[in-house]
Image (tube, rainbow, N blue to C red; front, side, top):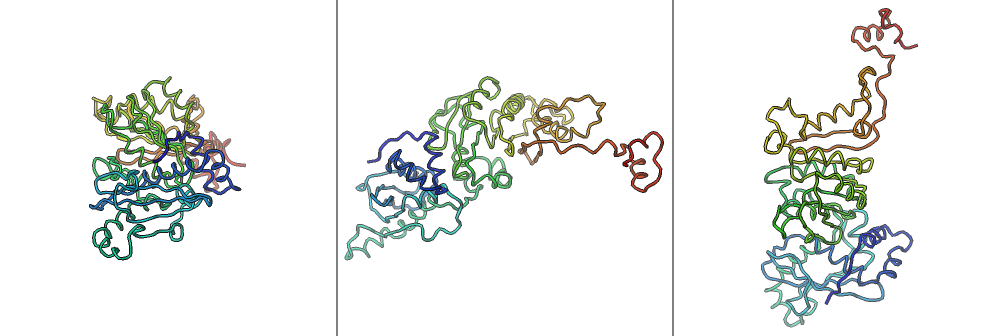
Length: 408
């Protein structure tokens, strides 16, 4: 039987930090919290990452974790159409024993990505089958055991998963159905994958069905193996809570609610707005949450089709889009270039002017980069009209009215 533990965020951060093997940090974590708590966290992480089972015949995998002093053993049931789950030894046929040293499993789950996975585990096929009955058991369970073992080992690997495949595995519409976002996500998120990122996604999904939603949160948890993932929804979705996933309840258009969440759980490396898609809500969320994105981080807006739909506060006329998500993006283009405005324009730099350094817009999704936008505009001594610029470049005398701008 497994024990019930409270996996608070600090404990999880300590285990993840220990994966970098900083001077015996794992030993300190085990001494403070106990080997069983650390091992249980690892087992739950493996279960959450395991691939969908394809074996029709149910099989138990004996999962053993050793810390040099003791071996802790867990039994995981693998069967097609069912999630991998903890079981008792007597709940079925044990097809494979998989053995990990505690530190090695911590490094594999939370440490640097290693494309080569050989030499990190021990295995024993049919660990409780007598020699005389081995071939008989092989006929019934060999293929199912092979498939079940592969299912489980995918959850133990540090190899980068395919984000499009994860979208289907965790049942999100981000690729292959309504949208085709994951190649863009992979392009912009890949550099963060090995970091201890804090990700906030607005909108957990499932609408008002209490027990549904959370698929994309699980996808981000798998994609960011060292990250902490938060989901914000207007209704209670606490059923999705698990190690490294926290559901928060609040209104994405309410400043007080957003500020409270950001102060408690931010700053964030990545914020994704996949909430109501009501344009006023999109603008309100950006205004209050973008300041809580870390420099070098990203703010993502999905489903910008609502910018054209009046039912979501949009406008069918693209030229009349100032109050929509697309209008926001257009204004951010100006924000990036604000240092090029004539001084006579009288514009005072806004927060976006000073902190947006890039906007990448694709079909129905956009990525906004945060950083210090202070590279400086074109110097004032550069002529501001084409003819004067050509004359300055060719060495010809400048007209009297622009001669004061000529470089010394």
